[in-house]
Amino acid sequence: MARTVEAVTDLRIVPANEATWADLAAIFGTRGEGSRCMCQRYKLSRGEAFANFPVAERAARLREQTECENPGSDTTSGLVGYDGGEPVGWCAVEPRPHYDGLVRVGRVPWTGRAEDRTDAGIWAVTCVFTRAGHRRRGISHALVRAAVDHARERGARALEGYPTRTAGTIEQDLHVGTIAAFAAAGFTAIGEPSPRRVVMRIDF
Image (tube, rainbow, N blue to C red; front, side, top):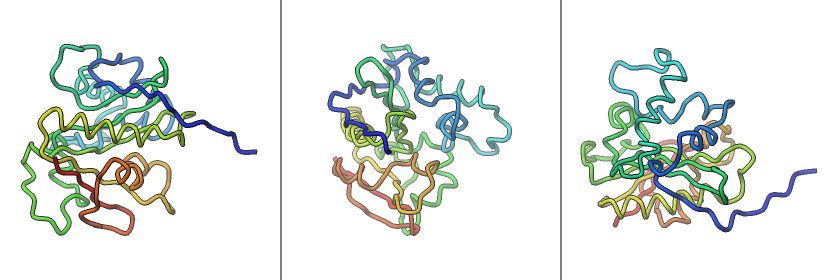
């Protein structure tokens, strides 16, 4: 019998620099794709490859990028969600040029578009990750909504996401978020670069 899960009704979401590193590490866990990637897929620079960086190095980079445990910082690379006092979700949201791999080699955002890839006024959501044991409770929807407010408050002119269709998608590909989560936050589709992926955007 399938386990019944209740929707989260009182999710608290904070900039990652206000969270502890222990909380963020707990969200990614020790197994699965998230624990291996540590949200570095789009952060690698020219000439870098995952094979050259062990998980510990990826984790160290994420910790530096988020400015965890530095609430006075005016920069961070994402948001952390809490259900009560328990860390349950992560959303990567930054100016689009901060994702060097996305800008240089990512095909999905650019197919059929003539965009200035260096425009820091355009922000992007590249990862929406819910902790194992807390999925299917609306956490990803809440994180995307919070990303809209976060980007707008920090001066973004627009925010993009690159979600996937859920039909036939393997779990490890869901880290980019779902079309439903972005649509519920006010995004509209502006491109369909592949049968599974959609470019969605909200302008401020």
